[in-house]
Length: 604
Image (cartoon, rainbow, N blue to C red):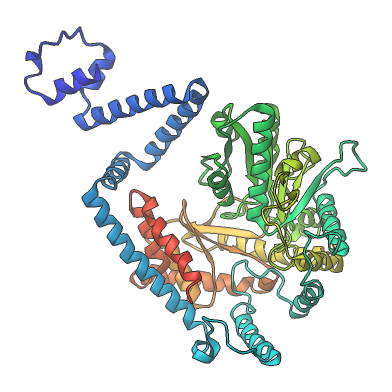
C-alpha cells in the first residue's frame, strides 16, 4: 500500500500503472499528502520493525514498542529539521566517500585537541620537570638515591597543592587540611604492602574492611545480622563510585537471569544518573533506558519511569543527589514502583551520600534553620533515600568524597546477603586453584581500606557534623545568592538542590553564554564543572570553600556582566566544544575527540 502511494506521489504516470487501486481510505489520504522522502522513511522503519519483531520473537515486542516510543519523543524534542539532519548524517557516515572525509576531519580535530591539552597540562609543570634529568621514559640504568627522590616528590606535591588549596576548584579535594592528609598518609604507609586478597597474612586489614562496611550500613539505616535472621544488609568495599555501580548492576543482572530467566536485561533510570550506569550497560550487555527529567525542577516523573519498564527490567535507579544538578530523585516513589514490579532498585549516593545523613541530623537539631529557603515550610527537608525504604535493594556511597578518605574508597551495599553473592566471581576449575573475588579487582590496596577506617574513626559523628554544617551553609549561601531577591540577573538555579552541589544556567543563552561565564570565572581562578542538556555550570562545595561564598558570588556576578558586554571574548574553549556538541546533528561524532583526550592523559 505504501509503495502504491509512493508511486502516486512521485510518478506523473501513476494512473497508467495497471495496479488496481481501491477507494482511498482516510489513512491512504493522509499518506498521499506526505513528501516522498517521508514515505520512504516510514516504509523503511515499518519494514525494519517487522523484521526485528520476527527475529526477536514475542519477548522482544515490548522492547521494540518502548524503543519506538522513545524514538518518537526524541524526534519531537529535537524538531523535524534537526531529526532529518541527524538521520541524513547517519546515512552519510555509511557512504564510503563521505565516511572517509568525516573520519579525516575528525582525526584532524582530535590531533589538534590532544596537542592543545598536552600543551596546557605541560604549562602547569615547572621548567625543571620538563628537563631530561626529571623525565624518565625508560628505567634508569642505576639505582637512584631515595632521599633525592623523596625531595623531588615533596616539591612536586607542594606545587600541586598550590593549584587547589585556595579553595576555588569544584569538588576534587573534599577536606583539604594538611595535617589531616598527613595522618591518612601515615595510616596508608603502615599498610602499603597489604593485600585483602590474603586475609591470612593481613588479618587487621580484613578487620578494618568489615568495620568500615558495618559503619556505612549503620549510616544508611540498614538492617544488620542482629536485626534479621537472613543476615540483614551487607556490602563490600570498592575502588570508587563507578565500580560500586558496576557491581550493583551486575548483581541484579545475574540474579534476574538466574531466578527469572531474563537474557536481555534492562535498567530504567533518569537521564541525570551517573555515566557509570552507561558503562555498566556497555560492559555487561544490558540496555539502559533513560527517562527525561523536568527542565525546571530537575525531577523525573515516576509515571514516565513506569511506562518505560518492561518484562526485561531488572533494575530501576535513582540518585541522592545526582552529579549534574545536585537534585535528589524521588527515591521513595521510584523504589516503591520497583518493589511493586518485583525488580531491584539502586540508590546512588556516591556523590553526597556521606553528607546527607548529617544534614538530616543538623536540620533535626535546628542548626540550619537560618539558611533554609523558607524556614516556615519543609522545602529543604531531605527526602528518604536509603535502606529505610523497603524497595531499596542496593546503595552506593563514596568514602573518598565527603567521607574524607584517600582516593579509591567506596562502598556498595545490599539489602540481603543473597543479592550480594551475585556480585562475586568464582572459578572452580582454574588450574591455579579455586578462585573467588568480591569485586572487579583481584589484588586490592589494603592501605586505602585502613586509611579509610582511620579517617572515619578519627572524625566520628562530631567531626562529620562540624564539617557538614560548614559545607551546607556555604552551599545554601551560594544557592540563595544566585536565585534570591538580590540574585544574579541572567542566571537561574536548576531545581532545589539540598546537598552540596548548585547548578545554574543562563536565562537568556543568546545574551549570556553560560560556558563563557565558566571561562570568565576561570580567569579568577575558579574551576567549575561544565555540563550539558541543559547547558549549565555547577559548583560542588567542599570544606575548602567554606568562607568563600561571598567571593564566589562577587566573581560570578562580574563574570556574567563581562560575558554580556564582551561575548566575542568567550567564544572559544569549552564554549566552542559544547557549542559544537549541541550544533551537530549526531553527537556521536565527538567520540573520537573524547577518546583522544583520554590518549593525552598517558602521553609521555
